[in-house]
Amino acid sequence: MNDNRNPFWVIVRKEVTDHVKSWRFIILIVIIALTCMGSLYTALTNIGAAIKPNDPDGSFLFLKLFTVSDGSLPSFVIFISFLGPLLGIALGFDAINSEQNKGTLSRILSQPIHRDYLINAKFIGALIVIGVMLFALGFLVMGFGLIAIGIPPTAEEFTRIIFFIIVSIFYVAFWLNLSIFFSIKFKQAATSALACIAVWLFFSVFYNMIINLIGKAISPSEMASTYQIISYQRFMLNLLRFAPGMLFNEATTTLLMPSVRSLGPLTMEQVHGAIPSPLPLGQSLMVVWPQLTGLIAITVICFALSYASFMRKEIRSR
Image 1 (spheres, rainbow, N blue to C red):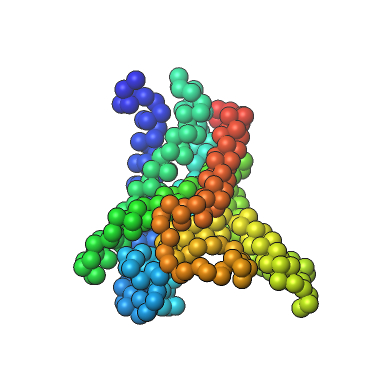
Image 2 (cartoon, rainbow, N blue to C red):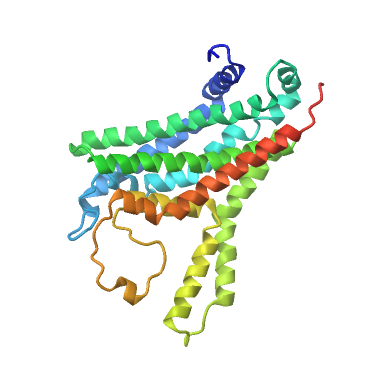
């Protein structure tokens, strides 16, 4: 069937247009663009100091544009980790309940279209906007970096940056799906927005506090063996990995810092004989494969919950 007549793509185009023309999106894109340009300026002014003798990542100059910070402003990766959830929440917290409150939802579903077209189009439309924006920001950083440094990125650096942007899209998509789920469950947009922000604040602030309290309660004694201490550290690290932000930070750090060879505590036997050198992209992906799988899994699960909730939702005409 021609896409121009396919109701699904008609709804997708409408969603993309509504997002791009909304003041909410314009304000968000201005905030994110300004903060990212601020982090890029900080990286460019401190990139010389970041390259140290015997630095395994010294040859990956372009990747440092995304990770370097002098402490005054966070790096580009930290900004995406912090502002990405807000972008996903802003694009989805009123996706369904606003249509229902205005009475347009029942009119749309009374047309000869499949019911799941609407929920799928809501997600795809917002995901297109998120993907285009993140790719645009990533290429903007690379463009300014190329002008300032004068050295083009290598093929591996470019590929690592592309993988970083793709991981960022999945990370933001999780929060988008969560906000759509709450927009289905709650009738008022304000309630769904507050619920999303509450979950975001819990994982951003309070979750680490709770894990620290648990860590103090079960911390091993000073007489504990090395293996007991390492087991404790691995257990605490696995608890932290229940937070989506932790999975994102570990995945992006490994992709943008090729010298990272492990994301957990190691024994002296494991460290002995290891030469500090950058890993190829394939091996870096193997290191963070559990994090990537977990991030994709929670995104898919959250979308499945939204899909099932919408398909079972009773929609009455007003």
